[in-house]
Each structure stands twice: as structure tokens, then as C-alpha cells.
Image 1 (cartoon, rainbow, N blue to C red):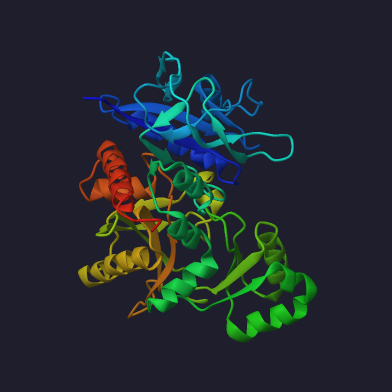
Image 2: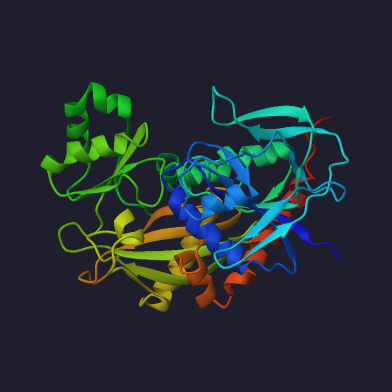
Amino acid sequence: MKKLRVGVLFGGRSGEHEVSLLSAASVLKAINRKKYEVVPIGITKAGRWVTASDAERLLNGSTAEPAKQLPASNLRAGDPESTTAAAVLARVESVIVPPVPSQGKSSTLIPFETEAKPLELQATAAQGSVLNLDVILPVLHGTFGEDGTIQGLFELADIAYVGSGVLGSAAGMDKDVMKKLFAAAKLPMVRHVSFLRADWESKPKKVIAQVEAALKYPLFVKPANLGSSVGISKVHDRTELAPAIDLAASFDRKIVIEQGVGGKRGKARELEVAVLGNDTPEASVVGEIVPGKEFYDYEAKYLAEGSYPVIPAKITKTQSRQIREMAIAAFRACDCSGLARVDFLMDPVTSKSPKIYLNEINTLPGFTSISMYPKLWDASGLKYPDLIDRLIALALERRAEKQRTQYSR
């Protein structure tokens, strides 16, 4: 049986570049090479697309610019008569697939670099080697990777890909839009306000007055479009508010400020659920993250010691059922597909009747073998390599469903 040709796309221009490399290394190590021909594709922080040895250098953390970028080649659905040299990479092994000369000529969308812009799209005839893929597994976290940008490229190229489409990805990335969709679905959320960077820069006193009129300290100040808790600050009083807004505004034009759950009574419990599926999604067991710091920020997630997961979370069966149902509802509210991790906040243990709030959805969560998303499914009976298989199958299923749609009369 012909192996499916799977492109694993990693790196990218976002602040989560390094997290993406870790996720890609885990995927490339665990993916079943008896079933798949794997093509690693890296994107440098400058936006260059690279394959083979340059992708390996990127995966291993090299900051030097690659000797060669991805040539002006086609990115299109699989063609058995036309392949390219590819390195099947992992932390512990590397397999080189010899090149086969291209025999086909077609006009498709490709990424390439110019002096003016790091990444552009151009339609061109095939010249030289061609990337012919049956499905793409993107492990691009953050801006340009899970915000609908790269998903739009896949849609234009008509390639099956893992994860949510353009709408679901964009909605899952923008915390302001996401909350509007959650509100329309009548899902419980913490009190919050949103405003633009331009408003803050032109009328800072008015913005502070609006925030303090609507919310009580402590507050969480966040850039609307970013992941891995980059640019997020916990604010205890007015003296900390302006610097926190300045930090968030450096990462995005929209800022979201949320009222802290639990107030001054204690830290909220941070609960997470993994969702898997397309039109009939399923939810994993509920897990809890116990942060080693005051909240689960970037340093607590990736750098500092002390944070640890509790799987399954120590909650009642009723609470578990409620949270899992809310996770699926959030997944559907944002029109997600494939995978997502849904995060919740619960009143601290000091509360007699703790309230549960939907916090956010992450459409391309961390995907190392020890990340919460795979760990939650492992605890639910789905092992890491089988999870990868399932995600690839869902990508193909979603593309088959989309092909039933008529686009012209």
C-alpha cells in the first residue's frame, strides 16, 4: 500500500517559535513511518521556508540563516509521479529519501522569499523538485500558524491539513472575538473588557477609568492575539495596570482585560480538556495544572520548575461532566475541527460552591509528548502515536467533506 506523504510544518515567525520546534521534534520521533512518508518543512524566524538539511538545522535550534531556502517549487496535493528530496527528522534519527525528477507541469500556489517581503504567494509552472503532499500536519503555534493565516494557504493549495479551518483558527486566536462567540453560545465567562491600542495611546486615563468601573482587582491583562501566555500580566492594583497594558499592547493592537477568578481569596484552579474530532467531537478526561508561580505564564510553562499536572483533576463527577460538555460547546461555537485544548477557571478551593468559567480555546496546543493535550488523551486511552494517526485521518475526512461543496454554478 502506498504510504501517505505527510508534511510536518514547524518553526514560524511567532514568539512561540521555540515551542513549535519542541512539538515538531516529538511528532517526528513518534509518527509511524511504516504508514507515512514524512517530509519536515521548517519556517525560520525571518519567514524562510526550508527543507532537508536546513530543516534539520532549524529543528536543532540553529539561528544561522539557511544556505538554501525552499526553491520556487509547488506546494500541492500528492502526485505519485513527482517527489522531492526530504529528510525524515527526529531527535534520534534521520532518513534521507532520494530525489525523483519532476515530470509534471502545473500552475499552483507556492511560498517563496523576496527582498520586499519574507513570504509571498505566486502562481507558477513547476520547475525542478516539487513538494507533493497528501496532508500537512502543522505544529506552528501562535501568530501566522494558528490564526488562520497558514490555513488560508492550505485551502488555496487544496491540501488536507490537520486542525481547524480559517474561521475556527482565527476565532480561536483572537480572545476578543472568541469571547463574543462564547457569549452567543451562552457559555459562562469571567467579566472582561476589550479595547484597541489606539484607544490606550490616545486616552489612557479614560481607558483606566473604564477598566476600574467594570472590573475589580486583581486583573489579567492580555494581548488579544497571542498564545503560550506571552505578554500576559497579573495586575494587583492601579500602579501595575499601565505597565501591563503597555506590555500587552506591544504584542497586539487589541487588549483584553479579565477580572481574576477568586479575587483576593486565592488563586483560581486551572482546568484543561482536550477535544478531538470534526462534526462529532469528543472530550478527554479533565486535567488540572498546578502552576509553580502565581499563574501559569510562559516562564511557568516552559522555563521554571514547580508546575505540575494532575490527571484526572480532583473534581466531582458532576463538575467533570459539566466541564467536558462546555469544552465541546466551545469547540462548536468557534467552528473548530481536528483538535483543540479548552481551558477553564474554577473558584479556589476556599469556595463552598465553586463556579466554573470558560477561559479560552487553543486550536493548536503544545504537542510534545509531555504536553497537556497528548497527556489528557493518553489518560483517556489514546496513545501519542495513535493520536497522530487519528488527527491525520480527521484531516483527510474534513477535506473529503469539503470536496462535496460546490463553488460555482
